[in-house]
Length: 177
Image (cartoon, rainbow, N blue to C red; front, side, top):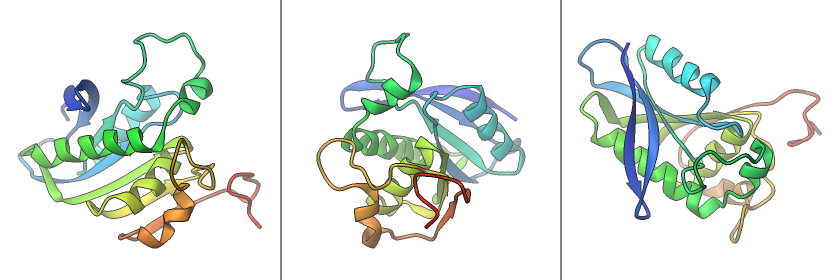
């Protein structure tokens, strides 16, 4: 199964996106796989490759592309510099890229992510109508906006696709009660 890094232009800058596709011609249904706080690392690339092994093309945007390359800051510090408006622009650029690829059926896209990526998944389920389904895997801090504007949870009424939320009983954000 082929995988590669592509470059996508967003807000006048290049953003790297990891693309993993099943063997064969396609077009295949696609998944936008949102990074966790550590970035598009081995875990996220492996997740994309597992999607491809199951017949789904996967695209994962590098949401840290606006930062200086090789930042020595820890993942949580980098994550806290993200803003919902620029994250949404980045994910929308990744969606546009996925829809432009001949091996991906751009009308059959889902979105998923773990932890920080789950939060972004919930945000994008409300901010985009491109998705047929969203899976939020223990996305925390959905009650807090990153920057100006409403928090993801405040946008719940704008969600236009089914959302599956997976959370542990002992999770603190969101709390189980």
